Amino acid sequence: MMAQEQVRTKAGGAILFDPTVSSQVDDDWFMPSHWRELGALRMQTGGRGGVALVGTPAGEGVLRHYRRGGMVARFLGDRYVWTGADRTRSFAEFRLLAAMAREGLPVPEPIAARYRRHGPFYTADLITRHVPSARTLAECLAWGSLDAALAERTGDMIARFHRAGVWHADLNAHNILVAEPGLYLIDFDRGERRAPAEAWRTANLQRLRRSLLKLGAGAESEAVFEKTVWQPLAQSYAAAFRVGGDAP
Image (cartoon, rainbow, N blue to C red; front, side, top):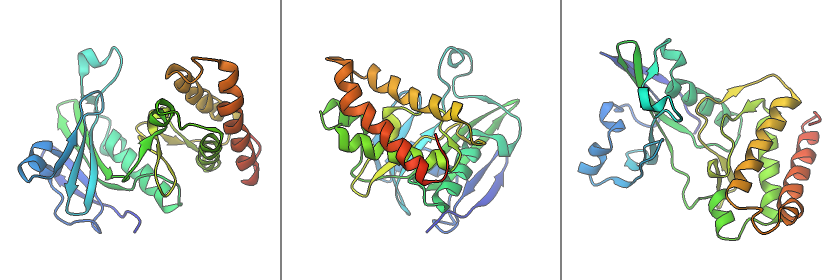
C-alpha cells in the first residue's frame, strides 16, 4: 500500500505520518529509548545518521535522526535553520519517498517524519520501512560479490531514477541496497526532482564511481575494475536510459 499523509501539529513541532500504517504515531516513535523499553529496539548505530532498527506496530522500521556532516557539524550538530515546515529535511524526504513509491521506484516507503522547533533552528527525524535481508553494495564489494551481473543491475536501477528526474544528493555504495526482491536506493536527504540534464546525471554516476574506488574497488587494478564493474554498469545504465525515451 502506498503512503498517504496526515500532519499532526504539536507544541514546538509537527509529525507527518501515513495514517494507513497507524493513527497513533506520536513523539515516542522517534525515541530509541521508547522502543528499547518495549523490547522493540533491534539495533542502533551511531555516526552521522543516528540510525536505529525498531519494531513498530507497522512492522520493522528504520529510524534516522538527521545530523549534519562536515565542518558545520562542529557548530550546529543536529540543528538546521528553520525556513518553514515544508522545507524541513524530514518532511521533504518523506514526500519525495512517497512520490517515488507511488511511481514504483525501488525505495523504502516512508512511515513517519517529525520536526521539533528550537528557536530559529529545528531538529528532524524520519522512519521508513526496513528492507529485510538486504546488504549494501559496499558490503557486496567487500565480500567479493560485486560482479558484472550485479553492476548491470545497478546501472539499470540508477537509470530508472534518472529517467524520473530524481537526483540523489549522495549516490554512493552505502546507499544502494541489494535484497532478495531487487535493488533499492536509500537516504534521499536533500534529494530532489530536476529537469532533464546530462550534467547532473553524469555527476551522479561519477560520485558512485568515486565511492567504489575509495572503498577499494580498483585496489589491485583499476583497469580490471573498469572492465568487470564500471563498463557493465555504465553500459546497462545507457541502455536502460534509452529505453526510457531519452539519451544519457
